[in-house]
Length: 120
Image (cartoon, rainbow, N blue to C red; front, side, top):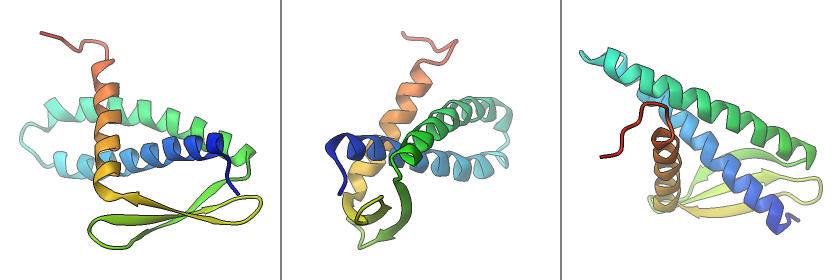
């Protein structure tokens, strides 16, 4: 069984994990752009910030004996997330669009607190 607080912590970890994967995929694509020198520093800063938060979150979950086993895409709308716990393993169902939105919001919030970010 997974408590509400553990689930909240796991959800944060999952969003960080997906954000890191997304940034790493984008990084390889952006490296090949003509204007890569403009975009790569932004991605590098985001990835650095997200990575630190990701490992902090992963350590907290490890203390609770909780880990991500796998993501299983059910269809275009839903993904099952398999979670190993100290007791019974749990499967959490997420809406793909909600995950995408959460990842985007996380990245935007990190980008907006970057030094040198301008608000007009």
